[in-house]
Figure 1 (cartoon, rainbow, N blue to C red):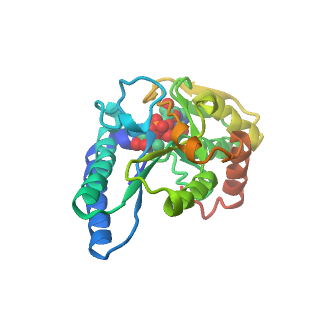
Figure 2: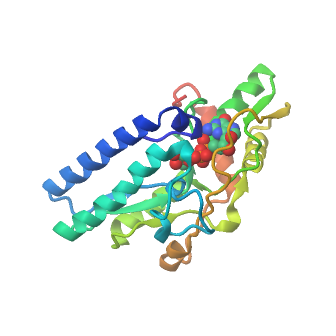
Length: 250
Ligand code: GFB
């Protein structure tokens, strides 16, 4: 069960309970049916809020997560505990990846519950048609690393077939590819050719200011992996959304 900052702030209990149920049912059934490998998803938003940067895989349990999504964060951290216990007690090599903020076609474009990029794409699309201003929530100052879903899918196949550690691995673009929410909004505005006004609603929460993660472990395994350039990925996602507006999840 995933959602953007604002959905997490409204439903920390549901994020905790539903994800704990999913974790235990999926992993226990995999074990009982002798599934050889399970790759679970954590997220770079589950790391301690008070931390040094860049964040790496060793830091998952080193302190409380950001209060906006503690339910989701603790539930996801428990997957790492589950995986270590299945390995110790049954020799299972169940593992986890830690993607940073994912975006792309087929995303959840719901404005209230979705993540920032699909939210901005949907809002820009509406502002264009209604000739209103684009409302970006928060100050635009927080910083994020965004990974294109197509790149994540390619990395997922590699993890499934080649990655044999139980320890999680961060799947993210480099620290140098981190952008501000403002820069992300500008990329969406450019991709959709929006000409209207862009306003920042600073009454809305900013959430975590940054959660800069290191992809050094991934680069050690796959030094030649090429991520899709951010603006190319945004353009492809915007084009998909416009072409599939009627059937998109929104
Ligand atoms: O993707 P997002 O909702 O979650 O991004 P997080 C929130 C940031 O984008 C905040 C700004 O700084 C918001 O103020 N923002 C601007 C918007 N406009 C919008 C908008 O239209 N929609 C949204 N949603 N935000 C989540 C965690 O953190 O990261 C989840 O809460 C999950 O658990 C996810 O792990 C990957 O990146 O802040």
